[in-house]
Image (cartoon, rainbow, N blue to C red; front, side, top):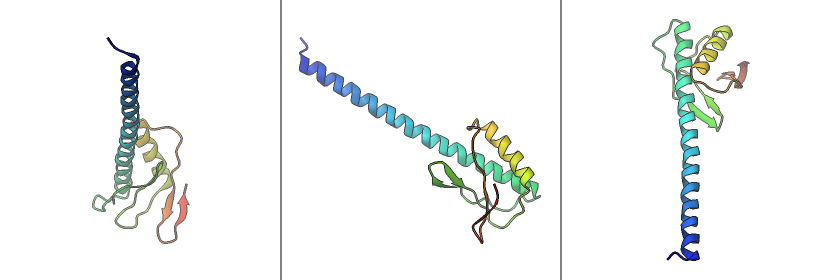
Length: 117
């Protein structure tokens, strides 16, 4: 016969398992989202390089600055046409099924000034 203590203990264990599963699931979702962003940004970088007829310059590793802010940079300076940038970002984010609200800034490395936004 199961007494109240055993029922309470089983409910506590079930609750703990549920909490662990739920939290690990959200961490996995955040990690998956971060990986998808990094892949999309590298694809954007590749397209920007191709628009400059450059298939040699390296795209440096994508850095996660904050939870929702990422940085992509290149091995050397390059020209970024704002119209091409907008088109490439829009296409990459649509393919990746990202939220429609986002900001893109192009920052001049030497001065840390925003060149395009």
